[in-house]
Image (cartoon, rainbow, N blue to C red):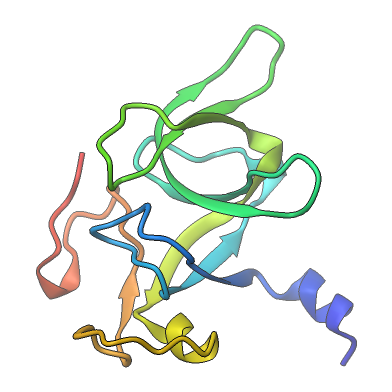
Length: 147
């Protein structure tokens, strides 16, 4: 099957995280399962964890949590996003058209094996966990909601 055809019908994309910017829920080396954005990146809410194109010249994806949804008078939608690891209130403002999708699950530490950089980690290589999304009320593995 042609990869471009599969890319158009498959609703998910996979990303390997390269940093601990979203710690304590997402770590470097985690493989993220991302549901593609629908409707030009619209419909997300505060607390959703999204992947967006953060580049200006070459493709580069970033993972951030939405803090606030903005609806300027020009009819567009923007998301105020932040990292989880440093406690900053705002990291950047993202246009909805730059959203690639929402993180739905993660494969813990799998990216370290796939990427060839297996390190000394006490984290399991066999867990598939739901995304750290604040709209969930009960999370497995002892997670708690973060508002």
